[in-house]
Image 1 (cartoon, rainbow, N blue to C red):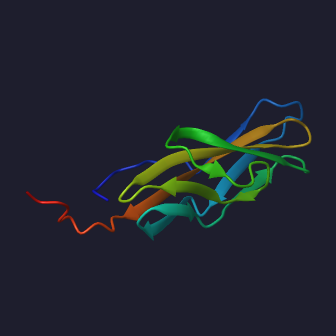
Image 2: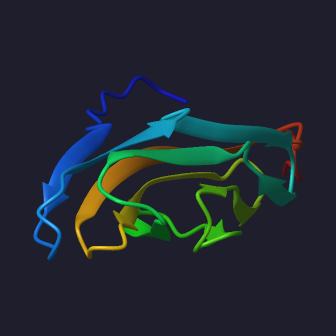
Length: 129
């Protein structure tokens, strides 16, 4: 992977909601990635959203914010892994968000950077004329 600069906001305060409470969401780790050799499926380590403030119980909704599509393995749980199929030498990157809603309908949002990387298994010699 070549050099890249990505800024990530780890958590944002609550917006709206009927309870007036404030929710801050932190996601740990805030970067999850997996590398494999050649073609195949990868599953990242888990990312876990932890709310503070508001009134439990909480609900969780993970979704793609920007970038390549991964399968969110547990889209309504506090903790999830991400899965993707990678071609030989293909990389995928995305930012996913999790919206946490408390029992009074207040919300907070957290973010995670997701990466999947495949190292090429071809020797590069191919058919030469």
